[in-house]
Image (cartoon, rainbow, N blue to C red; front, side):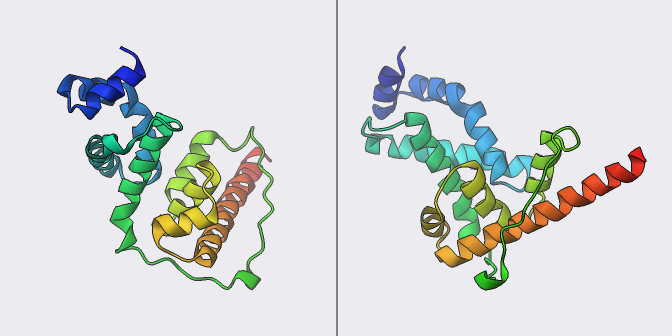
Length: 180
């Protein structure tokens, strides 16, 4: 069955089509959920809630743009909704922030370590970092999604980068000591 036919059947609330759509996209969307969740369990909950929203709103999809991108945005928004009211985004004076220069030696810093330290960021920083650096949203879009100001988005991104830079530099220093 083609994707267009699958979407058409999902719009008719066909349970088999919904199951097939879930099986087709669950792994990709779960990876997105992991970026915006504190735990594996929370990511599973976000995926489930995201698919429920997808099935509820599938009539709104007008065959414009990427269907996968449309679903990804719903899943991200679903995960972020849980933080909007409970998370406080820290305001930082933008004049004090400088873009941290970071040299990463790919042989010494693994992608697994990078993902680990990104996941360890405080929620507010991790969300803004993921939205901006990994998913390509603008600060304007992030401010709307998280209901924060553009300045707050920029400052939280800068703080996330500073924390990541410090952790990577500390890791590289440890490796240098051990290899000496």
